[in-house]
Amino acid sequence: MEALRNHGKGLGLDPGEIETALRLGRPASDATWVTASDLGGEALQIAIETMESGRHVEYACYQDDGTPQGRAVIKLLQREDQAQGLLTAVHGEASDEYYQWYADHELAAGAVYHVCSSGHAACRRRLARGDRRHLVHLDHWRLLSPAVMLAVDYLRPLGTRLGKKLLDNAAQQKAEHQVPDPPVGTGLEAAAKAAAAQAEKALRKEEREGRERSPRRGRSERSREDRRGLGAWMSIWRRTSRGPEGLSDPGQTKRRNETKRSKAMAERERPVAMQSAVMRRIPRGPAAAAPVRIFGQPQLGEGTCGDWRKRSPGIWRSDL
View 1 (cartoon, rainbow, N blue to C red):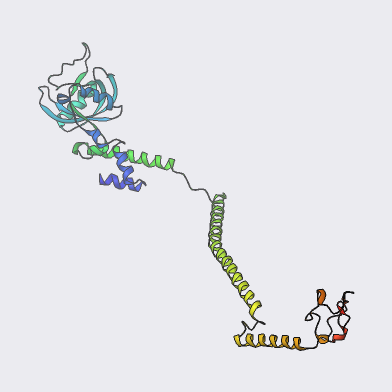
View 2 (cartoon, rainbow, N blue to C red):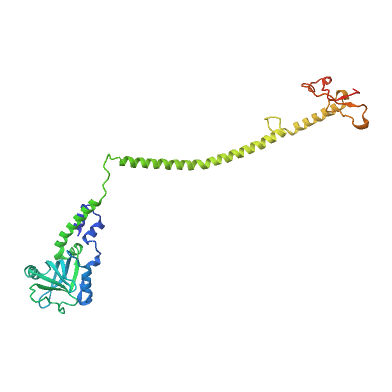
């Protein structure tokens, strides 16, 4: 068995393929012994379902008086009468040398094998009158495969021969169904590389876009926050500061306010003629000393000069 396994490995077969080939693709239970004295009519039904042309069958041999005489193997040819369980076959090896001589000289001339439904001694099947062939009863038999033959001494040479042939056939079928690699220079390799490169490029682009998308949103949000903070700071700066130096000092603000108040008080104490038009009080109603005439419109440049005599003539009183 080990020699056949090594032979199969040398042919490129794996252990599973070797076992399948040596067992003919059938389960190990296929080699179970069938005893007609135990099964009765079921033995014939099993033979009908399992026996095939070309399969090897091992059976128990008997002398004319019913004494056991070892075992032998036959190779099935065809069913002569399926209903009666009659088969034709080619006889092969036998474990007993006397039975081997009987098979080579008597059975080779012509024999019919009968699948019994009872023990051979109780089987009543006979050939028709005038049929000169030998009738061999099969009341204890089993189907064989090279894997089973290798475990039996007198069948080991046959199992080795059949096993090598089966392994060679399995290796040949495997080579025929194997898809060959494309030859160099057909362009298939270049096309495959180009497709792989394009797929890799698309994948890298997608990953790069995924990495950049989230940080950009973060920068936008931070920019908006910075702009809002800058606007608030500029608003405060416009209200309370004089320039880019920052917020005004509290003391500086107080001095500025005092200066404005002192200027306003000095403006009020000046003669009416020297007060600006904005600070004068125009009499209204019956308390007015003289009628007031309003005429003219300010001209360009008037009302902006430091000389009060050149002020705008928009407001005039007769008492001035």
